[in-house]
Length: 257
Image 1: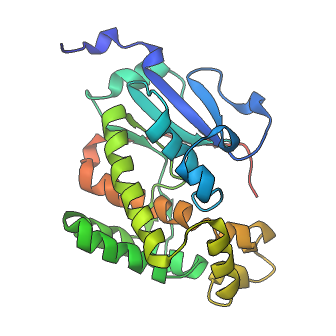
Image 2: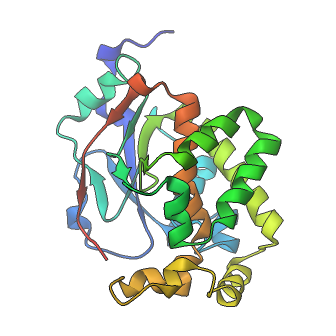
């Protein structure tokens, strides 16, 4: 039965707030938001890759273990969509757009690939590109286009319908698990050891004093899948969503490092 747009209710949307530790929940919007702490997750990633996936752990929990509403949103404990009218936002789906994203982050003089290389290590994106070429060749041109562009929708944030959300998760987690298998990373300990062994090659760990120490830690470097997903979500969007069906929504940032 076809659902009329006018019949959609606010409870058709839930935006899940990804948090790795307790924080002041008074900053969370009161409507259509639910905090999902990583310690409340119970899944394969939580058991094996507690740090590697960053907010991807909560994404996997939603994908595997939670009965989802018609529309699903992902945000951070420190970053929220600035939404004034939730009913209007919901009613816009199908009629005006298929996904809601954050404003572009422009790397200006650098491409997406160059920026990642200057922050971490370029081999990780090359490996993901090889995986896409082998298993998802229809996405290869989209991958190349994004890598050569100079802007992305950042933070692994989106609002999307439940069916597309599951299709995205099918795609991104298959690539991430293939990447981990290729690297022989069985758990966080393997990744942290790799970071220590390769710290001279990881650009973020060798930056000068003008870079916040948070970004120079081994734990930050070991969030490999979270960093890769932040780039690859743009590949999926480019392949699956027409540009005129993308709604950009401003965000509110409540904490910076």
